[in-house]
Image: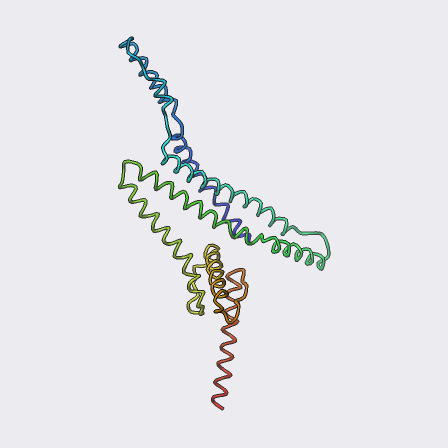
Amino acid sequence: MYKHAEEAKKTGLFSAAVTAFCIESFQALSQSSADTTNIFLLAISQQIANSSAPTASMSMVEGFTVSATDIRINVLYFISLALALSVSSVCILGKQWIREYQKDVSVSPCDAVRVRQARFDSLERWKVPQIMAGLPVVLLVALMLFFSGLLIQLWNASDPTTAAAVTFVVSLTAILVIVTTVVPACISMQPRRSSFSPFRSPQAWLFFVIFRWIQTWYDDKYDVWKERPPILTSWSEFDLHFLEIETKNWFGNSISSVHRAL
């Protein structure tokens, strides 16, 4: 849990990068004062050159509209920034919770153990470890939103070469994230010690839980399950559960071999 809180502190760098893009893209949502000044100067020069000709300075100023592309880019950027700052806020709260959990009390060793166990049970009851583990997932979502806005902005620019190069890099990153999220769940459905995937992550566990829930619902509906699978809450519990099954199967096979030998 403390490790996840430490990792979430790195969102400051990401937030700073997104903020720079937000400042630049936000300018497209309103007409800049420089453009308005240029319009009025153009109108004044036209009026001086031909006093009888009407000017359209006010219509040009009032006719400013924001494109749908600029709106989409700003929505993606600002949602990404809001998620990153939210992760930082929850990180601060998490460090406060952990600090209270680690705070020593001036009591007897027996009472100190009881207090620490009560605090630990409270953290588990209120799902604090799960909250901390979910922070990198939220940050990953913010990163994907930022990449989406960046690609839209680049492809609407006049330089397709840069857009294509960045799209290639972002695509490789997205493929890596998707593969390392899906593969552990797929492998874990038929677990063997030699095939346990090292790509364990909170998002991979979330995908595994959703996949297991869908499979359980389908099998319950059509009466496929012979035995309902246990409720597991982490990759560690998953590994222990299937190692226990492997041990039971090994003992069962050993006993069967002994009986056949006799």
